Length: 369
Ligand code: NAD
Image (cartoon, rainbow, N blue to C red; front, side, top):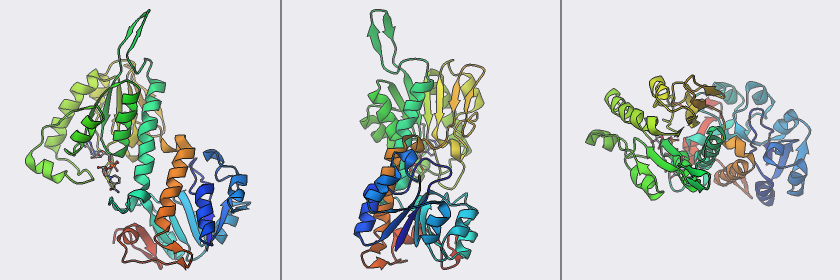
């Protein structure tokens, strides 16, 4: 099989590193890398060549050879047109927003959307949401230090004492937990909240204080899974009241709350931002999914009249491109090893991980069916 790696048009990350290329080559497959694909992730063409890959001079040259195409983001219609009929595609296809599945199906592409991987123990080492959100949580705190006009830790100096920053984390999934750990390491005082009651223990084990929104037994039971559910209007009102109180006291708020397949829940209204202190910062990791804060603008940094900075910059993992690519590439290698071996490629629809992620196959769109 020939595995093609493309240079991403809208991302700094890349879907294979020299380390994973060596593994594919070791299994007896060929790897072709579009020139410059790894540059933004600190991997020059020469490193791919040393690992056993060949370099394609253009995107079309790479795609037209690929029996398997590995990418970070979904290809557009032009790229799909350049792919081989019947190729395999593995990428983050943003399945709930993607409009190109009919084009992929028409090309008989077997396309895998990595975001749809079940959150099971067996799938953990392939989970791109975990590997990338972990980086987003880390980078969010470092971005906050950039926009926040004060110190993070408490400092006692001859010129006076500096108070530690108060950081509020909303949404304690993979990104939120890493944000708590990173903010703690920098010496901040950290509070966090989530709709899933099981996160309380995790927050406390990292040295954070859990803000508990009062919940009915029914609400607790509905949220004891790995993913959050859309909450009732009554819960949202209780949460908003509590959040408003803690947001006023916070110097930095990092929001990460997501609900798969739905717009991000609105957790911080305009009136809450208006009550925040001048100099305070909101980093909205959910910006690309519509934002947790009413004032977030995806891809932008907004300065409010009362001196609050609302950061909606997109693709935080892409700001740590080298490590994000290394982890993403390993996720893909482990996932592909379900199907790819020395004997070739075998797609087993009985495997729950394959069945859950396969969005187009044999000319059909499977997603949503
Ligand atoms: P996510 O990115 O979907 O959401 C981030 C967090 O936002 C979640 O904790 C969610 O509960 C929270 N949230 C949603 N709506 C909210 C609201 N209205 N108010 C406050 N918080 C809200 O989550 P994720 O980071 O992908 O992780 C979800 C869970 O999956 C975690 O428990 C994680 O440990 C688990 N997980 C399991 C595996 C595995 O076993 N393979 C892999 C990764 C994650």
